[in-house]
Length: 87
Image 1 (cartoon, helix red, strand yellow):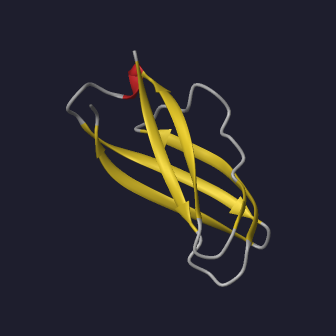
Image 2: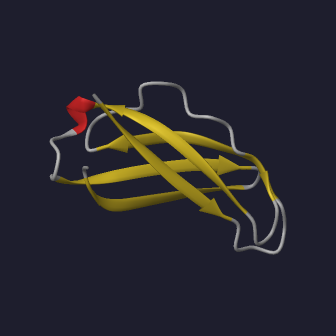
Image 3: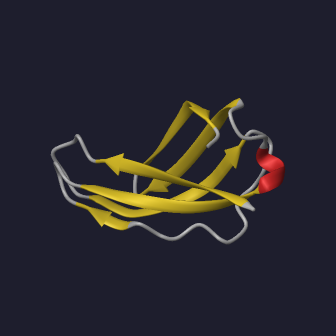
C-alpha cells in the first residue's frame, strides 16, 4: 500500500510566482516514492497542486502525523507543515 497526499500552493502575492519547484516533502519521516513534479509559474490569485505518493511505512491507518512541504520560486521560497490523519 501507499499514501497519496495533495498540497496546494496558493499565490497570494501581486506578481507571478515564477518557476515554482518543490524541493522537499515528507510524511512523517517517509520521503515520496517518485520525484516531485515542477509546478511552474503561478499567477497572482491562482494555485497549483502537487500530488505525492508515500510508502506505507509512513505510518498506520488512523495515526496522526506531519506532512511537510517546501518549494522554491524565483526570488524566494515557501514551506508548510500540516497535521494529518492517515486514512
